[in-house]
Length: 363
Length: 125
Image (cartoon, each protein chain N blue to C red):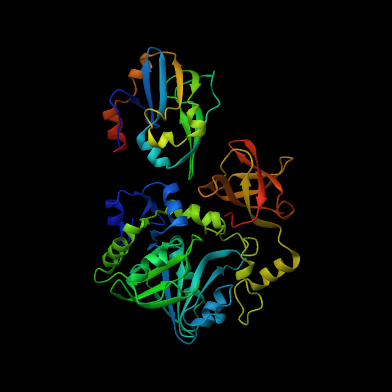
């Protein structure tokens, strides 16, 4: 099992640790509800250094990205980031990712899920027919997400960069906590605002940055947050988790990612025709959000039924929502059952428990 | 984490305290920590006679769900009604306020066969 540069800190803090995507990661420190509330109301720090980062360089870098992803990366300029996904030949999703435009038409960084690093690397490499220079910098790249309404206010004293006014999905490279070449990005997976910072694990940078963040943050209530709360936070926002809500069998259109599927962009991308056909003919199932009406908590892979007891789909993610204090979930259902307020039933230990299709974000 | 010496323990992470032929049962400190914040405890077996290691209920935490296994054979007599409104008692006080059921034990000697605090602590390491 791999460690991140912060693993010993998590253990010293008494975190509950578990293997995630081959890394020894903190699941929780003080408890999910407390950590969740800390991010929603104040600020918290996530070590997400397990995520993968690829650098793509050269005059054909943009062309390669355009051919393997669904969103239109030609629209982003230096300092802008974009959510996107790689499609496979059947129109399923290889992974979802963020594309960072480091230098227009020349240098891009792709940030991918930890569990898919090798698979994604092979996928992009396979399509790299025009000699784009590719570097997998995942192992040496640290990533901390500092999220919450007070995150940027707490961090601002650590940098000259104006992070308080950094626009959503933009980024700046500069000095942070006296470490150079830190990429500060106004992105995240919580829906509560804040930044994500990328830096190289050299010269004790990881310790320096972690310690500085907590030195300024702890007096203001900033806390370390584990992966468990990361999941409840993203689920309340209806953000997809690869492997749960989207995977190589779900299309971006089914998964509610039509907004990042640019069928009209200039460059052809993998499975474009399949997605065009899906769009023209209409999808047969759709990822919906739902909340439980009767008592029960939906979990991944629970069967969804209609009132007559027919199977209409499956739960992909579910939890008790710490913010709402009710049980919520995401799942695929047949299109005729996907309308708002449709009553559906989640099969919980062989008992159908009533739920209702609702809009997400849930909060 | 604590494992009181006056209790007996199971490999399924329940504790049992015997008084006469009535036993109180709950989950261990280790178990509550593994589960995380508990949302509710679902027990519909009051009045039922169950065998040792049979499921007597489930506990739903934010992130996960787990079955509750009866440490010894007997009849479920009572559920801790305080958990209905305050399921967090299981997290905060697993051996006292967070108890789950009281049962009438078929054969009190069965309890002697369960793990001591020391043995259980060794198991969860």
